[in-house]
Amino acid sequence: MKARRIAFVGWLAGLVLVMPVLAVASSGPRYQRMVTVEPVGPGTVLMRIREAGPGRPIEALVLRVDLADPGVRAGLLYPGRVAGVATVSAMAQTAGAFAAVNGDFFNIGETGAPVGPMVAGGRLIKAPQPGRALAAGVGEDGVGRISTVAMSGLVNLPSGRAALVDLNDANPGYPPMLAPNGIGVFTPAWGTYARSPAVRGLRSVTEVLVRSGRVARLSDHAGSGPIARGDFVLLGAGSGGRRLARLRIGQSVAVRYGQQTLAPAPFRFALGGKYRLLRAGVVQSALPVAPGAERTAVGFSDGGLTMWLVVTESHEVGASGLDLPELAAFMRGLGVRDAVDLDDGGSTTIVSRLPGRSNLGLLNRPADDSERRVANGIGLFATSRHQRRARSDARSSPSPSP
Image 1: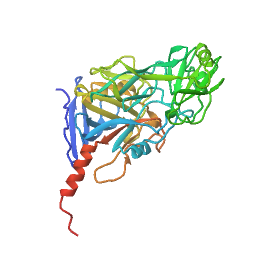
Image 2 (image 1 turned 90 degrees about the horizontal axis):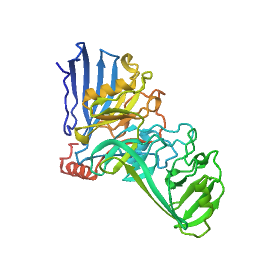
Image 3 (image 1 turned 45 degrees about the vertical axis):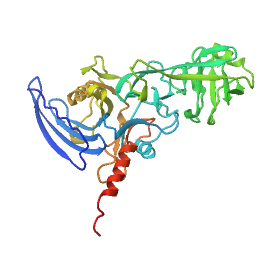
Image 4 (image 1 turned 60 degrees about the vertical axis):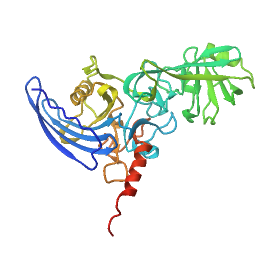
């Protein structure tokens, strides 16, 4: 017989369910799965899963989110600047999320910026590095999906239009973003980190500060430091740099850019992933079989109306962690149809506000034994409609006896 799959629907306040499930894999061997389920927010349940045999033991923490529930919203968490890092707990607490996981791989030890795209509130905040446009998120239509996100943009110069090839990306350790002849744009969201890695080793570099739509400063090298609200910086190299060098103080300059995606609707929020794990329920071929480790992944089912935020452990009950094919198979076993991996190892983090508690708590045991500061994450938020209803319920409830 096939393994049983249990669906949990609704907001079951204060209820904790513990269900041992004995299943038989198609090849015959038995395995034991223990699932503990508790609600942690509107439309959201936390599943604690322990699975033994026939492969290696699995310890997993899973947030199952009903995206069709008007009381919950999924969104991007980041430290307020692209070139910056913070713990998932700090980002979630600041943003008001009731649960969260870590997000994209990032330029650790340098800029802290993610390598993939970032979309928040429907706006593209950061373009992906070449080859890293794979992204997961929720569209403007409320449907969760996996697709690609790139940048499409133009700068209007007195000499005519030019294409923009980069947005808020200057990660060292990678090929320079503007090679060989590109023009990129940096906004206040980038932060204070030096912009020079975007043109590292390139010639004919020009940087232009644009304030109130007009050229305020020109330089023959990339700068650093904050960009004031309302300003932006153009950075060019090669023929792009030479074209910027022809500008003069006071000339009018404008930029227009946005997300370019193959998804059927623009993303309301999105962040980058590295490998596609599942496509239409099929484990993808050629996934790296690296040593087992803590893993974070995001997936979707039910036509994109259910989001799965999955964290696997490697510390408990002898679990040695999963490789990517094992992670994909595990998620498929949960009923996930489409999935992508996020950052793993010491970055793997899941936090939540558990029932009866006012503060966010760290649910997993990070590989570093403490939360790592990361570039971004996925947060879950109670919408204002749900919050108003909760306050109304509290006012209508009888006061406790002294």
